[in-house]
Length: 119
Image (cartoon, rainbow, N blue to C red):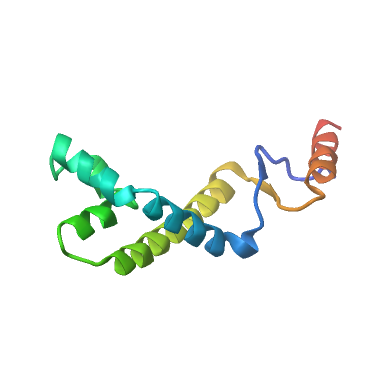
């Protein structure tokens, strides 16, 4: 019997440290000027710009508007990003019947699946 065909081979990163990678990336975005960039966007296009509702920009806008502080914004952005990453992985798994390849054996494993699928 042939194996279940995968339509998508996903070359993923280690899921075990996803949260720490998201935390690091989020802190870097804020450190490199996300709040200032958001302020510039507000000044140029107004406070109701659709982009300002997205992850990161929404929290930065809330800092500017005095609704939350910097630490709260970081925490919320990290939480929302982790939730999005989980939804994306679930969507790929359910929609594309993905096979995730997460380690140093990714290439040989991918080739094995490809050869099995091609027969």
